[in-house]
Length: 436
Image 1 (cartoon, rainbow, N blue to C red):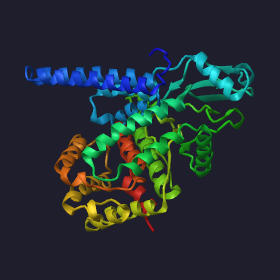
Image 2: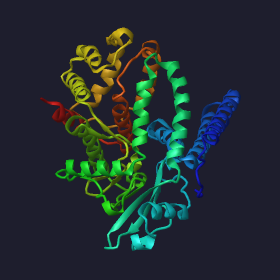
Image 3: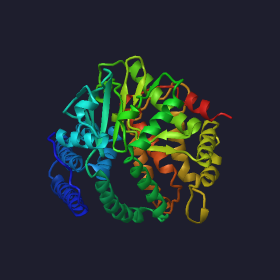
Image 4: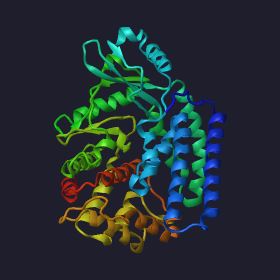
């Protein structure tokens, strides 16, 4: 992909988003209009080609825009198993191979933030970006003492870009939200906004990394890069470079399923531990935020989006999982009510709505044979069918804002484990972290 500076004005960005939506919408409408003329394999081929074409449009536009808008595109790629592989391949480019900003611009940002020429700061600094993300990109470098490093640099004016996006996206999502829910939108939006704004502060991210490194000091399966404090500021974050097997390669046939199972187990326990033990969760589940080692360890990157779990929420999730493991389905409506998930006027969700979801999740927690993510190829279709069947009850659903990033993180890792086709002791892990 070519290098390009992102659009920074609010008007310019909303025009680009509107133009993208218009092109994709027209393409979909046209395809539907002529769909009746085809059938069988030909129809499926046309649909896939159209999806790939629109995915490419999304990648090109949102990848160039960066900021919060790009986050939307990245979230589309979290559930690869829901998409045709050709489409998932295109959208995955937004995770790590999005268009990069010219290197001379990023060098200027580093020198301005660290107040010294690049040559005085590093023994070597690679011009080509190692990875590009929504609010910054990573360049590999070598420290003066010879250690390999990764330098994460914010894009110029990214604070203005994110501010512009938040205004535009709030209007868009408030309209969409009002179509589906009667709950108060404002506290939910504030939760999303606060997490996005935290990602702009690399000093905050560095502190997250230091805290997580302490928490996982005695957990060898998880590798967290060390922060290089003297070369880090609010908009430049330098850390030791810890490489590994990249996700697209890790899921390939090159690696045995037993190793993928171990990676999946580590990812699952990482999330469960964050919720129940540490009450501090890594809340950006894009698979590109992880790398894998051939001894089963997992390297974790990008600590900008973290969720601190209130005790009440952790206790509520614990009670729900215990009821699931002990097969007390009749307790779920009241436990959800205590967690803050209910219908209007504090009416509990009905058992009729809960039971199908309960059965799906309980199947994942079976003991023998251990559940393999992706074994039920119709899982997503079942979830969507349930959503359609329960449309009327969902519209007046109320839920606490604190669960947004918890559920997003677990849903994203469900997709990651499905991509790995991981089989593991899911019930044992859940039991260990919620018992007592």
